[in-house]
Image 1 (cartoon, rainbow, N blue to C red):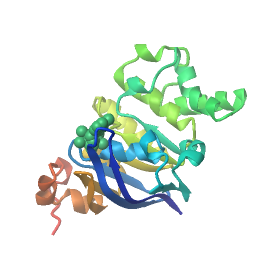
Image 2 (cartoon, rainbow, N blue to C red):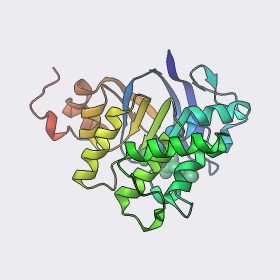
Image 3 (cartoon, helix red, strand yellow):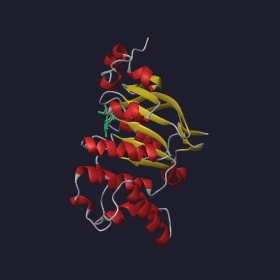
Length: 248
Ligand code: ADP
Protein backbone atom coordinates (compact mmCIF):
# COMPACT_ATOMS: atom_id res chain seq x y z
CA UNK A 1 0.00 0.00 0.00
CA UNK A 2 1.16 3.55 -0.67
CA UNK A 3 2.05 5.30 2.58
CA UNK A 4 2.86 8.78 1.27
CA UNK A 5 1.79 10.30 -2.00
CA UNK A 6 2.71 13.84 -3.00
CA UNK A 7 1.63 15.33 -6.30
CA UNK A 8 3.12 18.53 -7.61
CA UNK A 9 3.39 20.15 -4.19
CA UNK A 10 4.15 23.84 -4.40
CA UNK A 11 4.56 25.99 -1.33
CA UNK A 12 5.55 29.50 -0.49
CA UNK A 13 5.83 31.00 2.97
CA UNK A 14 3.78 34.03 3.93
CA UNK A 15 6.71 36.32 3.05
CA UNK A 16 6.38 34.97 -0.53
CA UNK A 17 9.54 32.90 -0.23
CA UNK A 18 9.04 29.86 -2.45
CA UNK A 19 10.20 26.73 -0.61
CA UNK A 20 8.76 23.89 -2.73
CA UNK A 21 8.48 24.06 -6.51
CA UNK A 22 6.41 21.09 -7.60
CA UNK A 23 7.44 18.06 -5.56
CA UNK A 24 6.07 14.71 -6.68
CA UNK A 25 6.89 11.44 -4.92
CA UNK A 26 5.40 8.23 -3.68
CA UNK A 27 6.60 6.12 -0.76
CA UNK A 28 5.31 2.62 -0.17
CA UNK A 29 4.44 1.18 3.23
CA UNK A 30 7.51 -0.05 5.11
CA UNK A 31 10.06 1.88 3.04
CA UNK A 32 12.89 3.78 4.73
CA UNK A 33 13.69 6.83 2.64
CA UNK A 34 16.50 9.34 3.13
CA UNK A 35 15.72 12.95 2.24
CA UNK A 36 18.90 14.88 1.59
CA UNK A 37 19.91 18.18 0.05
CA UNK A 38 21.74 21.38 0.89
CA UNK A 39 20.48 23.81 3.54
CA UNK A 40 17.39 25.60 2.36
CA UNK A 41 16.48 22.86 -0.14
CA UNK A 42 13.03 22.49 1.43
CA UNK A 43 13.49 19.28 3.45
CA UNK A 44 11.91 20.55 6.68
CA UNK A 45 9.15 22.29 4.78
CA UNK A 46 8.33 19.03 3.01
CA UNK A 47 8.22 17.03 6.26
CA UNK A 48 5.98 19.63 7.89
CA UNK A 49 3.49 19.12 5.09
CA UNK A 50 3.12 15.45 5.93
CA UNK A 51 1.03 16.07 9.01
CA UNK A 52 -0.49 19.38 8.08
CA UNK A 53 1.53 21.52 10.46
CA UNK A 54 1.66 24.50 8.14
CA UNK A 55 -1.72 26.18 8.52
CA UNK A 56 -1.33 27.98 5.19
CA UNK A 57 -1.93 24.71 3.38
CA UNK A 58 -5.10 23.54 5.12
CA UNK A 59 -7.60 25.15 2.85
CA UNK A 60 -5.85 24.45 -0.40
CA UNK A 61 -6.71 21.45 -2.43
CA UNK A 62 -4.40 18.87 -0.98
CA UNK A 63 -1.50 17.55 -3.00
CA UNK A 64 -0.65 15.04 -0.28
CA UNK A 65 -2.23 11.87 0.95
CA UNK A 66 -1.20 9.50 3.70
CA UNK A 67 -2.44 5.94 3.30
CA UNK A 68 -4.95 7.26 0.80
CA UNK A 69 -6.29 10.00 3.05
CA UNK A 70 -5.86 13.62 1.89
CA UNK A 71 -4.00 15.93 4.26
CA UNK A 72 -6.59 18.64 4.85
CA UNK A 73 -8.47 20.35 7.67
CA UNK A 74 -11.19 17.72 8.00
CA UNK A 75 -8.77 14.77 8.18
CA UNK A 76 -6.20 16.47 10.37
CA UNK A 77 -6.72 14.40 13.51
CA UNK A 78 -6.40 11.08 11.68
CA UNK A 79 -3.43 12.37 9.72
CA UNK A 80 -1.66 13.45 12.93
CA UNK A 81 -2.32 10.05 14.43
CA UNK A 82 -0.77 8.38 11.41
CA UNK A 83 2.23 10.63 10.96
CA UNK A 84 4.69 11.15 13.79
CA UNK A 85 6.97 14.10 13.16
CA UNK A 86 10.21 14.48 15.08
CA UNK A 87 11.45 18.05 14.88
CA UNK A 88 15.03 19.20 14.61
CA UNK A 89 15.13 20.92 17.93
CA UNK A 90 13.96 18.83 20.91
CA UNK A 91 13.36 21.99 22.95
CA UNK A 92 10.47 22.85 20.63
CA UNK A 93 8.82 19.55 21.32
CA UNK A 94 9.20 19.20 25.09
CA UNK A 95 6.89 21.28 27.21
CA UNK A 96 5.74 19.23 30.21
CA UNK A 97 7.22 19.17 33.72
CA UNK A 98 7.99 15.45 33.57
CA UNK A 99 9.19 12.98 30.95
CA UNK A 100 6.10 10.84 31.63
CA UNK A 101 3.71 13.67 30.82
CA UNK A 102 5.60 14.61 27.70
CA UNK A 103 5.58 11.09 26.31
CA UNK A 104 1.94 10.61 27.38
CA UNK A 105 0.78 13.83 25.70
CA UNK A 106 -0.02 12.35 22.28
CA UNK A 107 -1.83 9.21 23.46
CA UNK A 108 -3.87 11.33 25.93
CA UNK A 109 -4.85 13.68 23.09
CA UNK A 110 -5.94 10.70 21.04
CA UNK A 111 -8.29 9.62 23.80
CA UNK A 112 -6.47 6.56 25.10
CA UNK A 113 -7.46 5.30 28.58
CA UNK A 114 -5.15 5.86 31.55
CA UNK A 115 -4.05 2.24 31.47
CA UNK A 116 -3.40 2.28 27.75
CA UNK A 117 -1.41 5.49 28.12
CA UNK A 118 0.69 3.95 30.90
CA UNK A 119 1.45 0.92 28.77
CA UNK A 120 2.30 3.02 25.69
CA UNK A 121 4.59 5.34 27.67
CA UNK A 122 6.37 2.41 29.27
CA UNK A 123 6.88 0.68 25.95
CA UNK A 124 8.09 3.84 24.21
CA UNK A 125 10.55 4.72 27.00
CA UNK A 126 11.88 1.17 26.95
CA UNK A 127 12.35 1.32 23.18
CA UNK A 128 14.49 4.44 23.45
CA UNK A 129 16.37 3.15 26.49
CA UNK A 130 14.96 5.62 29.02
CA UNK A 131 13.24 3.32 31.49
CA UNK A 132 13.14 4.97 34.92
CA UNK A 133 13.17 8.52 33.51
CA UNK A 134 9.41 9.01 34.01
CA UNK A 135 9.67 11.60 36.79
CA UNK A 136 12.69 13.50 35.50
CA UNK A 137 12.27 16.98 34.10
CA UNK A 138 12.88 16.92 30.33
CA UNK A 139 14.60 20.29 30.54
CA UNK A 140 17.34 18.94 32.79
CA UNK A 141 18.37 16.14 30.45
CA UNK A 142 21.27 16.04 28.00
CA UNK A 143 20.68 16.85 24.34
CA UNK A 144 20.71 13.17 23.37
CA UNK A 145 18.31 12.24 26.17
CA UNK A 146 15.93 15.05 25.21
CA UNK A 147 15.97 13.77 21.67
CA UNK A 148 15.10 10.28 22.86
CA UNK A 149 12.23 11.63 24.99
CA UNK A 150 10.89 13.33 21.86
CA UNK A 151 11.22 10.12 19.90
CA UNK A 152 9.45 8.21 22.68
CA UNK A 153 6.63 10.79 22.52
CA UNK A 154 6.28 10.17 18.81
CA UNK A 155 6.47 6.38 19.16
CA UNK A 156 3.86 6.36 21.94
CA UNK A 157 1.36 7.55 19.32
CA UNK A 158 2.12 4.42 17.26
CA UNK A 159 2.39 6.33 13.98
CA UNK A 160 2.30 4.44 10.69
CA UNK A 161 4.66 7.01 9.20
CA UNK A 162 7.66 8.41 11.00
CA UNK A 163 9.07 11.68 9.65
CA UNK A 164 12.38 12.62 11.22
CA UNK A 165 14.07 15.98 10.77
CA UNK A 166 17.83 15.85 11.41
CA UNK A 167 17.52 13.16 14.08
CA UNK A 168 21.28 12.84 14.69
CA UNK A 169 22.15 16.53 14.62
CA UNK A 170 23.04 16.91 18.30
CA UNK A 171 24.14 13.38 19.05
CA UNK A 172 27.60 12.12 19.91
CA UNK A 173 28.85 8.94 18.18
CA UNK A 174 27.36 6.67 20.83
CA UNK A 175 24.05 8.52 20.66
CA UNK A 176 24.04 8.13 16.89
CA UNK A 177 24.68 4.39 17.09
CA UNK A 178 21.95 4.03 19.67
CA UNK A 179 19.47 5.97 17.54
CA UNK A 180 20.29 3.87 14.47
CA UNK A 181 19.58 0.71 16.45
CA UNK A 182 16.28 2.11 17.69
CA UNK A 183 15.22 3.26 14.25
CA UNK A 184 16.10 0.00 12.55
CA UNK A 185 13.94 -1.87 15.07
CA UNK A 186 10.88 0.27 14.27
CA UNK A 187 8.62 -1.03 11.55
CA UNK A 188 6.85 2.20 10.53
CA UNK A 189 7.43 3.74 7.10
CA UNK A 190 10.21 6.28 7.62
CA UNK A 191 11.32 9.42 5.88
CA UNK A 192 14.50 10.90 7.31
CA UNK A 193 15.72 14.39 6.42
CA UNK A 194 19.37 14.63 7.31
CA UNK A 195 22.91 15.69 6.51
CA UNK A 196 24.13 12.48 8.15
CA UNK A 197 24.81 10.45 5.02
CA UNK A 198 26.11 7.47 6.98
CA UNK A 199 22.74 7.24 8.64
CA UNK A 200 21.12 7.27 5.20
CA UNK A 201 23.47 4.60 3.86
CA UNK A 202 22.83 2.39 6.87
CA UNK A 203 19.08 2.82 7.22
CA UNK A 204 17.62 3.80 3.89
CA UNK A 205 17.61 1.74 0.70
CA UNK A 206 16.19 4.69 -1.14
CA UNK A 207 17.13 8.35 -1.18
CA UNK A 208 15.43 11.45 -2.48
CA UNK A 209 17.62 14.46 -3.20
CA UNK A 210 15.97 17.84 -2.93
CA UNK A 211 17.54 21.05 -4.20
CA UNK A 212 15.90 24.47 -4.48
CA UNK A 213 12.50 23.02 -3.69
CA UNK A 214 12.63 20.32 -6.35
CA UNK A 215 13.34 16.60 -6.42
CA UNK A 216 16.57 16.29 -8.41
CA UNK A 217 17.08 12.56 -7.85
CA UNK A 218 15.13 9.63 -6.41
CA UNK A 219 16.60 6.15 -6.39
CA UNK A 220 18.77 3.57 -4.65
CA UNK A 221 20.89 5.20 -1.93
CA UNK A 222 24.18 3.59 -2.87
CA UNK A 223 23.84 4.54 -6.54
CA UNK A 224 22.94 8.17 -5.87
CA UNK A 225 25.33 8.84 -3.01
CA UNK A 226 28.33 7.28 -4.71
CA UNK A 227 27.99 9.61 -7.70
CA UNK A 228 30.50 12.19 -6.54
CA UNK A 229 30.00 14.63 -9.39
CA UNK A 230 26.24 14.66 -8.99
CA UNK A 231 26.47 15.02 -5.21
CA UNK A 232 28.87 17.97 -5.53
CA UNK A 233 26.63 19.65 -8.08
CA UNK A 234 23.89 19.74 -5.43
CA UNK A 235 26.01 21.00 -2.57
CA UNK A 236 26.57 17.53 -1.14
CA UNK A 237 29.52 15.19 -0.75
CA UNK A 238 30.00 11.54 -1.45
CA UNK A 239 30.12 9.93 2.01
CA UNK A 240 33.40 8.46 3.16
CA UNK A 241 31.93 5.01 3.68
CA UNK A 242 31.16 4.80 -0.06
CA UNK A 243 34.57 5.96 -1.22
CA UNK A 244 35.37 2.63 -2.89
CA UNK A 245 32.05 2.43 -4.69
CA UNK A 246 31.85 3.88 -8.17
CA UNK A 247 28.49 4.47 -9.78
CA UNK A 248 29.30 3.82 -13.41
P1 ADP B 1 15.97 22.62 4.61
O1 ADP B 1 15.23 21.88 5.68
O2 ADP B 1 16.27 21.79 3.40
O3 ADP B 1 17.21 23.31 5.13
P2 ADP B 1 13.75 24.46 4.76
O4 ADP B 1 12.54 23.68 4.44
O5 ADP B 1 14.03 24.78 6.19
O6 ADP B 1 15.02 23.78 4.06
O7 ADP B 1 13.68 25.85 3.99
C1 ADP B 1 13.34 25.94 2.61
C2 ADP B 1 13.35 27.41 2.22
O8 ADP B 1 12.29 28.08 2.84
C3 ADP B 1 14.62 28.12 2.65
O9 ADP B 1 15.01 29.00 1.62
C4 ADP B 1 14.22 28.88 3.89
O10 ADP B 1 14.96 30.06 4.03
C5 ADP B 1 12.75 29.14 3.65
N1 ADP B 1 11.98 29.17 4.90
C6 ADP B 1 11.94 28.24 5.87
N2 ADP B 1 11.10 28.58 6.87
C7 ADP B 1 10.59 29.77 6.51
C8 ADP B 1 9.64 30.68 7.12
N3 ADP B 1 9.05 30.40 8.28
N4 ADP B 1 9.35 31.82 6.46
C9 ADP B 1 9.94 32.13 5.26
N5 ADP B 1 10.82 31.31 4.63
C10 ADP B 1 11.14 30.16 5.25
